[in-house]
View 1 (cartoon, rainbow, N blue to C red):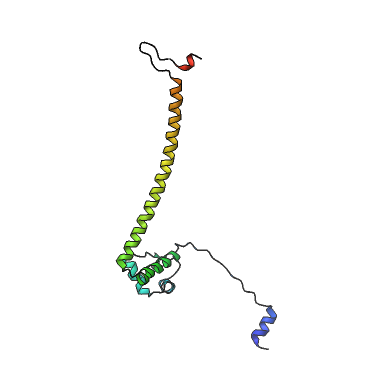
View 2 (view 1 turned 120 degrees about the horizontal axis):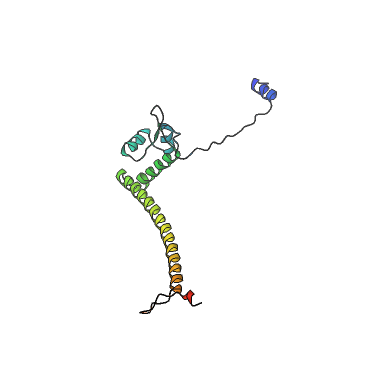
Length: 153
């Protein structure tokens, strides 16, 4: 009997456990070589993208670039736009600018829609108040006094 089989018999069957760790998508966890491999690029390409402002990796206390899952996804999108769609890096920059502008505009539209709803409710409240006050007041007759309808009831 081999030594490893002998140890296995003494300690019992091996049990494999699996640990899952949830990491925020924007937390830098990959060094440049790993991020480059995950994105299917050369590490120098990532450095170039960083210098162009297309990607902004986090930095460790010692200055090491740390890429997040979101960074890797962005790198894959850049790769897709350049290789499959034929965009140059200026085009990719413009796409990202327009996406940011669209997101900001969408947030502004949503805020304006919420405000419009609030204003509509306020207008309805004021209209109801106006109707109530109109019902309370009898028209002024020249030479007469302002009389409330409730004075007659």
